[in-house]
Amino acid sequence: MKPIFLAGLLFLALVTGCGHKKSPGPENAASLEELNRALAVVAMRSGYNPPPTNELAKFLALSGKTMPVPPPGKKLVMAPDRRQFVLVDQ
Image 1 (cartoon, rainbow, N blue to C red):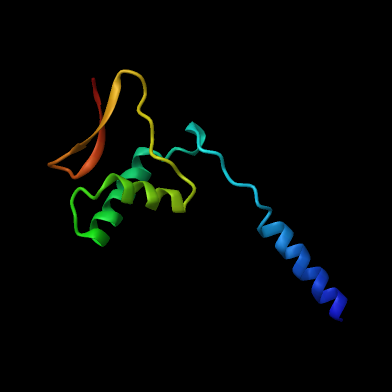
Image 2: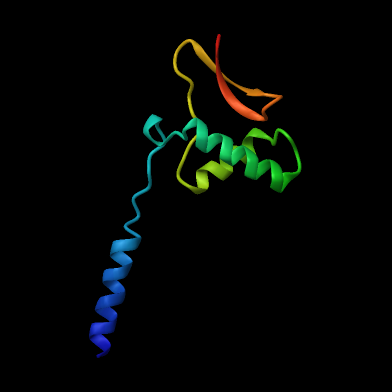
């Protein structure tokens, strides 16, 4: 019974925690919707609107995401009337 239990624990450890981390890159960048959701959560927790960028980046990092990089010719700004990030022409 004991060896089966230990084998099960070992199998579970190998499956859940293989140690591979996602490398930062465009494929791990948050979408605009995820960024706006993170903005709302961090703003409520910190009390600042807009919250500091480093707090927003830390919150996204918890889910394995990075700050998004806008496409060429666009920039990411926060619309004060909507309190959300939007893409605008440069």
